Length: 175
Length: 232
Image (cartoon, rainbow over the protein chains, first blue to last red):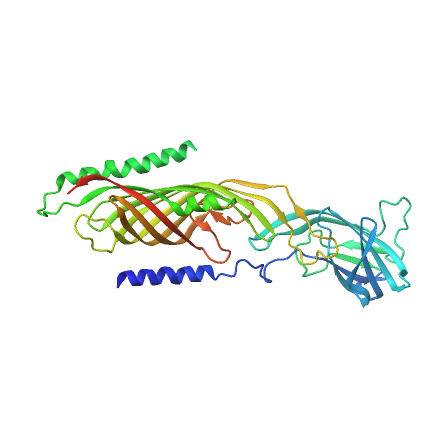
């Protein structure tokens, strides 16, 4: 009788442990956050101001990669992914964006972000995510001498130098 | 390495020296003499696993010593190097462990036999290193910039874990004094020291750990030989 009880106990525990859904990265675990940008009125910096027909391109190795979710939308806030292999991300923000015969139309403004990457362990299944610290920004391309300083982005403000979640804006852009 | 062998030696010597003294006092009138001896063995499961799995090297010595009709003190000592390749992470755990406790034999033997159906308890302790060999950053928005793969290892050395273990198993004498056994283990972590906020995903002797529970499981397939020291 005793033996049966112990065997039952062990088997039950084994099944319980083996059925832990640990091999999948659960959606509730922390993720690598995107950068949240709020667009504000340059004349009244506490007021949100919608950008008409905004499109954002990431610049990687001189190629423009359109962020599909920000493709000619009217919005006053966006979330954009930061580059993980180096601590610099370059973007082109287009206002009044359109594309005619494969040529990008609209008002272009470079946006440069500089930060340090921190790898944070999450779990066996998810591995590591990134957080970003010491965030700074420029509204022009620092690699081009005499680059136009803010075509339609007249100013900006880093309000949160640490990017560890997507709960609030990290950068305000004035236009 | 030298400490590992010291532990083995201690393990083998202590039970003999401590418990052999008891036998002198035996004055009961039982006619049948029973074998009381040190049984030493190997975990075949670890040997087989080492030979077929390139990512695993393990070796375990075990011993038990009968202290009363039903009760044995038992111990295992081992050395494991294990690499696991998960979707986003590849890591290697390397270290030694020792487990000590008792086995209670629930099987009533015929005269002069030491077959066992047993339940046991252990305290387990492991010293180990865990190295993250490489990893891919988990980023659900990596379609834009691409995946970021990091090949610089993160080495966490001198980690330790302490756990309790419940064992159930059988041991049968297949030849004279030669035993073959099988056992299941359920473990519960008591304390696992971590470094750099990186979970200990595998602990030698405990096996893999789980994110949301402190339980672990294992099994052994053990060949052992009884060195009959005393009859009483």
